[in-house]
Length: 318
Image (cartoon, rainbow, N blue to C red; front, side, top):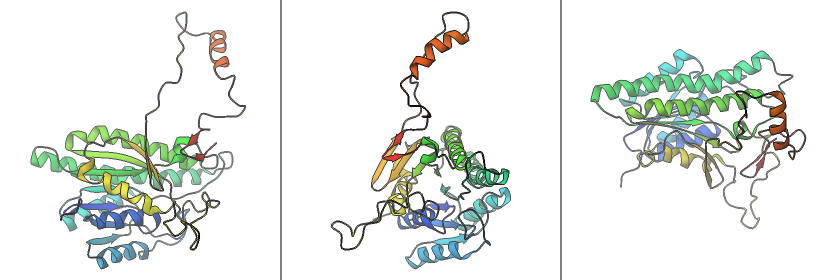
């Protein structure tokens, strides 16, 4: 019996730990040959010396299970190193079929305290890192499509966050980057569909080094508790199967989508819809007319509530 990703090759960025590690292992389990990318810094804020160990350990685990894998320890936020990453996959496996962008860092701060470097570094790793690998993978697929005179196989799975959907007061850099990832994904989906390539984004909820404080109050199942011997509901292993599906031929009609995933649940997010519409009674609005129309519309909203203060699948964000 063939595996759904048998004969395909994949890149997973940020795959040395946590969510990326679970995704790389899942793609390999489904039959893909995997380039495990991780810059290997020890701090979740991007601090510490780069290390080959995290990527090498995951690649070793895949090979020990009978799969194909190699490690890449470059920085995907560096344009040239991202190009080398894609070139490595093509040189080693003959082509690239799947790109999973997961690499990221956190440098949390309230907007009135955030430094320029804290802003730039998070945007660089998350948003520029997603762009860099996407740019070179897209060029590879376009060239292949031209060579064969038709569509080729290509899948991109990007990583956004519910911080973009519902706001996160202490993460203006992270929320902005993750919103940018969604825009990049939908644009890429439209641009590459003609070549046979799909691009989708996920908002995963998982307990990792990046989110340990966010989910600190949500306990893990304890051995001996009734029903407590199962998988942690926030384990990255709940997210990885969706990535495997989106990378597979079965998901060929899924394109430009945003999906929230955690703990045995997948939700498809609609694009924003118009909540209310007002038309001016003359050529253009006046201040008084807008006051008369919009102020009553928001009159019942609690003071201080924002557009993002909504309940997103059980997780309150304000």
